Length: 272
Image (cartoon, rainbow, N blue to C red; front, side, top):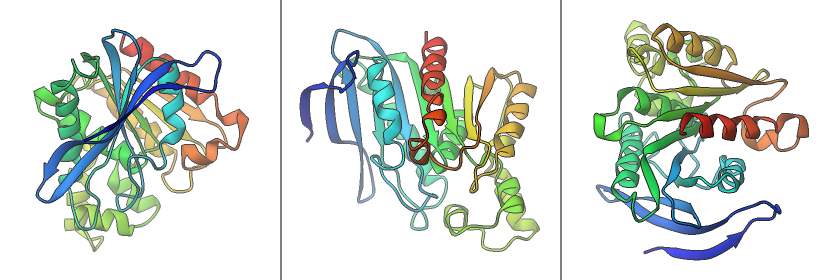
């Protein structure tokens, strides 16, 4: 069951009205009910759609944490958007959370008419751990779950690089099952890294990263951009000068808010 709040008038004068549905089940995995919240513009549509995947170090968070600063720009720009839950580590390891993202894509496509979505204009957006998942899914999903654009906020695109520059975190251990940084562990991390999974002509990517990120080094996105370009990908890297990890902290500094305009501009152009 879901609740409908209709209409919701946003604070800004130019804001759009939207229908919001909360706690909609999009998949059942064993005894786990996976749910999403949806915001659908008023009007006839069909609208471009964005599936938002939260961060939280793979072990915590939900569809309403860490990613909230992205909701209003998407609503104001008249996108349909869906923010999702997925199974968390260490109880669930890869590929479980990636499978959940794929299930969400399949669900949105199957319910495109009901939610006024154009199934040929769907983007994945993720931040931090969620960025890793949208990278992974965009590069490996079956044909029926492919998307048309990806926005990846400060993601660990190369897990070997992440461990070498930082450490083998509890989140990565829980996600991958790698507990020792030996040749076997490095091999598994490499195999699970989006940077090692890029094939020819990947979907368009926008990478957004702060230069002072203390959790996922900025060079992760610099190097991932190069890998995507080498495979013929259309990719942009938007740098947020002086920004640390998380769009939440960026809210405190007006100088770090320009990414929102770039985020929407890029999505509009790519999903045109």
